Amino acid sequence: MTANLPYRHTDDLFIDGDWTPATGTGRTLVTNPATEEVWGSVPQASAADLDRAVAAARHAFSGWRALTPTDRAGFLLRLADEVEKRAEAISHTNTWENGSPVAESSRAAGNAASIFRYFASLAGLLETPDVRPFPDGSGETVVRQDPIGVCALIAPWNFPINLVVAKLAPALMAGCTVVIKPASPTPLSVRLIVDAAVAAGIPPGVINLVTGPGSFGDALVKHPGIDKVAFTGSTPVGRTIAGACGTLLRPVTLELGGKSSALVLPDVDLDALSKVLIRTCMRNTGQTCYISTRILAPAERYDELVDMVTATIAAAKQGDPMQPDTVFGPAATRAQEQTVREYLRSGVAEGARATTGGDVPSDFDQGFFVKPTVFADVTPDMRIAREEIFGPVLSILRYSSIDEGVALANNTSFGLGGTIFSADPDRAFALASRLDTGSVGLGFFASNHAAPFAGRHDSGLGAEFGPEGLKAYLVPQSVHRRIR
Image 1 (spheres, rainbow, N blue to C red):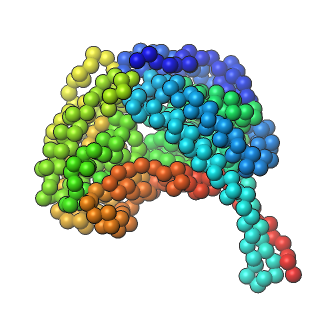
Image 2 (tube, helix red, strand yellow):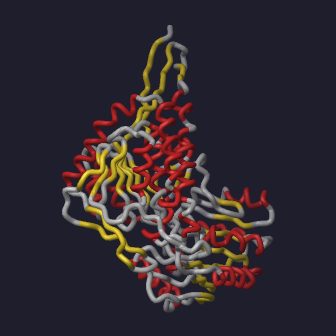
Image 3 (spheres, rainbow, N blue to C red):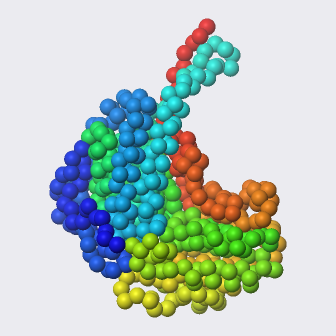
């Protein structure tokens, strides 16, 4: 398959409506994780570049917030159309940056467009008067929702398009302006979103894009011209950002790590489960925050479930992520490959049994490939059962009663996703309320743009998607007036 890659080696940042040369002298190299080829590079912005980007966003804020929500929604709808026109380039660039199978990355543009359209549909919510009477009837309060200001949007490398757009769409709809910093391994695909914004007529300064290492993200978080931070990434980095924002009393939304469970009930249809297993538990080569990487199996069906999971994972193709039938690609970076392999060694050392995969040589002469692995005989105290691995690794734990299964599902410091598999939908629905997690899928897992996606505990602060996601970019103002 010939790759459509509009951007490779670039020297520019996007500031105040133009691609402008960076004044920083460093560069970040972009490596294809399937081939280890350095195929692209971007500049590392300087402190002066960051100042220019924030100043541009600040200058554009007054004009953008002055538009009606309906007018801003019109821009978002045009932006959605322009993103879809770039679907192939977005998909291919994404895959060359982080190794996501093209079967996965080909959904990115459509999903991003859907997010823009959903938040555009909330214009009426912003335009509906919110009037609240005084308890004694002597007056009323008009509650307004103002845009919070200039927002720093910091995205991870696993879904570099959708996890930017999940922040960008509500920020724009609310009337905010933004400075985007993509993850270092994936700085090029988001440029296509910026191109789409230009084509959609988004005014200069409303969207700005800067690139740089992790330390540059720290400077952006702490910049005095930033009013809010939105970050998706690891829990340790999220804690650092939360600490900085706490000191500054700066609002922050954090979507962090997860160690979610698939609670399999004794009445499960294993054939039905096998059809959604990879999407639910190993999506994007296991590099997805909410997937259910811990499978909790009833003791009476443990062996047959282990057999099914092992056979399903072993049969799925791993290889060139640009091939449409590839299910598992490489790890996104060499460092991530080494992290996953260390967890594989840890699992064996602590007594788990690899039924497929393990820390064995790759089938490929190049690339950051780790064989998809299933561990049986896993106990709750093992690292592979407790810590987020972010790779193609599943752990299967045993439980003897529903109460024990629920306790195992909640025996984690995270609280992001989770699934319940049962032949009885009503039973599964009732059981969902006992799981201490922000989202639960019944028989599958998928996010809904109209519903909040919120982590609990070590999985983050605040919510994305839904009206709740829009609210994160608004601040209320109460105007009191007498009526008698």
